[in-house]
Length: 584
Image (cartoon, rainbow, N blue to C red; front, side, top):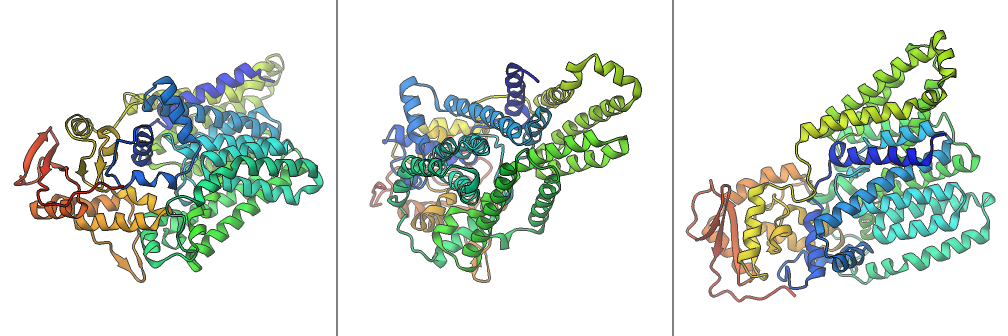
C-alpha cells in the first residue's frame, strides 16, 4: 500500500497542474460579474448605490457571504487572493474526497488514482453544469463537502453524512438539495442496513443546520412569485437560461451525449462496489436523480411551476456525471487486469479517449487528447511488458514498481501535459485577466467619478463593475439573476430595450440566446447608439451622474469626452432637467 504522505503528494501535484494549466484558474469568470459587486457592496454599502443588480443579494443566500466578509475584514486580504485560496482548497478537497470515495467503493488504490485523473478532465455536465470549474463559484466549495458526505454515507456514518450535506446546502443550496435528495431516498430504502435512531438524529441535525437558509430564501426579495409561472417570467427564462431548464430548446448532441453517458455508466456497473449496501445505494442515487430530472422536465415544459424551475432539477444529473469517473476507472482497471493480449486493451483505450473527449470543454480538447495518448501509450507498453514471461521474474523482485506503476504513469502524464499547457497558455496570474484596456477604463472610473455614478457599457462585455466599483445600466449576464425574481427580470429586459434590443420570438415564447449569439446581436445595436438615444436612456434611469463607454472606432459623439485609451472612450452624459433619484 502507498503511504498517506505519498497519496497527499500525488493529489497535490494533480491539484497544482489542474489549477495552473489543465483547468487553468480564471479570475474573474462570468459568474464573478455579480458575485464580486455583491461582495463589495456587503463590505461597503456606499458602493453601487444605483445598481439594480446588488439589490438581489438575497436571491443568492449562502453562508459563504459572511465567511468571506469575516476573512477579509479580519485579515485585510484582497478579494482576488481570497478567491484563489478558496479555489485551491476546493480543488484539493474535491480530489481528496474522490480518492476516499473510490477507496470506500472499490478498495483499490489504482482505481482511486485513476478516478482522480479522469475527474480532472470531466468538465461539462448535463444542463450546462461544470464539474471541475476553472474559477471560484459557490458550487465548487459545496462539491467536496457533498463527496465527503457520500463517502460517509457509504461507510454508514449517517450523522456525519447528513451534517456535511447540510453544510453544503448552506454554501450552495441547489447542490445541497440534490445531494440530500439522493442520500435521503437511499436512507429510507436501505433502512434494514442502518440504525433508525442514528437516522432520526441525522435528520434532526440536518434540519437544525440547514434551516436558516430556507428561512432566508422564503423571506427574500422575489420569494412572493406566484406558484404557476407567469408568461412574462417564462419568456425571460427561455431567452436567458433555457440551457439550464428547458430541454426542448437543447440541440440533438446534448441528448446524444447524455444517452452515451448513461450507457458508459451502465457498462461500468459490470463491476460492482465491495458491499451490497453500497451497490444498492448507488442504484437508489440514480433513481433519485432520474426522478429529479423527470420533475424538472414535467414542471418546466408541461406544467410550469415557479419553485420547480428555480430548483433547476435537471442540473441534478451532474451527480451521475460525477460518479462516472469512479466507476469507469474501476471498469478500466478490472478489464486491464483480465486482458491477455494487447488486442483486449485497445477497445478499452479507445473508449476512454472517446468518453472524456466528449465531456471536455472545447478549448481543452488538445490537452485531453495529448494526456490520454501519453497515458495509454505508456499503459500499452507496460501491459506488453507485464504479459511477457521474462518480466514476471523481474516484477516479483520489484514489487514497489509493480504496485505503483499506475500512479507513476499518471504523474508523468500530468506533468507532461501540465508543462505543455503552461507553455501554450502563457503567464499564470490570480489577478484580473481581462483585457488591459478594459481594466484601465474601470480604474479610471473608480478614481475619477462618484460612487453614485452609473455607466452605460457594452452589454455583451462583463465585469466592468469589478474594478470600477461603479453601477452599470445592464449586461446580458445580469439576466441570470432573473431566475429568482421576476420583477428584476422584467427590469433587465426593459433596460436592454432602452439600448434598442428586441428579443426574437418563435411561437409562444422568446428564443434562447447564448453568450456568443448575444454578442453578435447586441454589438451592432450598441455601436449604433447616438446622442439622442443615449440621452433618452439617462432620462429613463433618472441618475444624476451618467457616463457612456464606447469604442474608439465608433463615430465621434457630440458628447463631452472624459477619458480615452487605446480601445475605449468614456463620455459624460448631460442630465440637466432630469429628475434624479437613487435606487433604494
